[in-house]
Structure formats: C-alpha cells, structure tokens
Picture 1 (cartoon, rainbow, N blue to C red):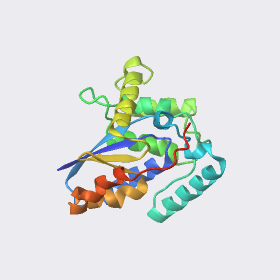
Picture 2: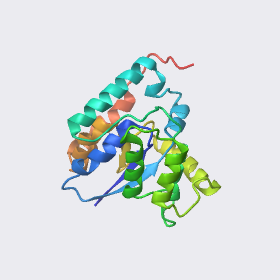
Picture 3: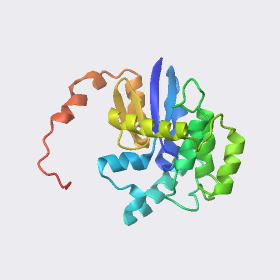
Picture 4: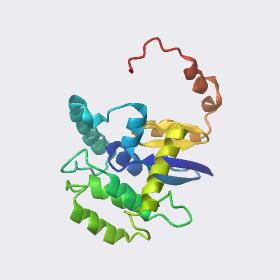
Length: 216
C-alpha cells in the first residue's frame, strides 16, 4: 500500500479540483492519503513569491482556467464572492476536527466539507456567520482559535517547507513531490511503478546550471 501526503490550502481552486479528482486518479491502486492543511501564504512568503491572484492579469487567467478545468473534469465549481480571502479560519477549523491521535491530519470528509463550503454556491467563503455554521456542522473536538491548533498549522507549514513544498496542491510519496492538478497523471504513473521515477532523469534536473538570478 502506498502512502500519499496531500498538502492543501482551501484558498486554492487547484487544490479543490485535485481533491475532487484524486479518487479517480488513484483507481485500482492500493493507497492511503494523509491530508495536511498548510498556509499557502506561508509557502509563498518563504520562497519570495506572489500568489497567482496577486498579479492582476494572472488572476483573471487563473479564474478562467479553473472554471474551464472544472467543466472539463465534470466537477462542480463556482467562484466564491471574494477571492483571495483569509483562509486561516478554515484551516484552523480543519485541524480542530482532526483526531487526537493525529492532530495534524483531518480526514477526507472534513476536508471535503470545507472545500465545498468555499468552491460551491458562490458565497463568501470567509463570512463569519457561514464559518460559524460550518463549525457547528463539523463539531470540532478542539477550539479552532486555540493556541494548540494555531501551533499545529504553523508546524504543518514549516514541515512542508522543510520537505521542499512550494505550492498547493502538492502530493508526496516515497520521498518525491508532485505539484499541481496537472501532476495527477504523473503521480499515478509513479504509483504504478514506472521505472523512470527511479532512473537518472528525476535527479539530473538539479544539476542544470542557472545563469540568471533576478531575486534581490
């Protein structure tokens, strides 16, 4: 059985699409998935990047593309009333629902409920009343605003960065990372045992020289 770690943030439409598409991508493969909420903004800050919705032309393209991808994959998706929004309340709620034995890992039902809260219906994902109703529905065992939950989200994000995660969705398996919705076929190929993933090409990219560095 293969163990897949799915790094996600509910703010990302690509993470939502990948979440909905994952079961089909893993059809016929013995597996288990750990869902790890992380703060996408924390990843961006660490790597010195802007999010796609923070660049005006890219923002428009991103929203058009995810709407097209949703209809192509047969996944229900409506843009929330406001995006980007502050996802901290949703991320902390997910972690507050995680079992005591694995406080970093909410289950799929919790993640599905929160993703669909954001990406179905077109409402304000961060609206306080909606968030309160969502919390009543999920009935978290811990306080989403408590220090333990806040610390867990920081720990999840820092651990993801240490593993080399730079964006969401990212899938980790056997020490390898696969980024983005479009990586699902590649992930499946790896899980099916394609020998390429143990060959020289996987590591050889790290030897490619960079002759320009525009970061200051």
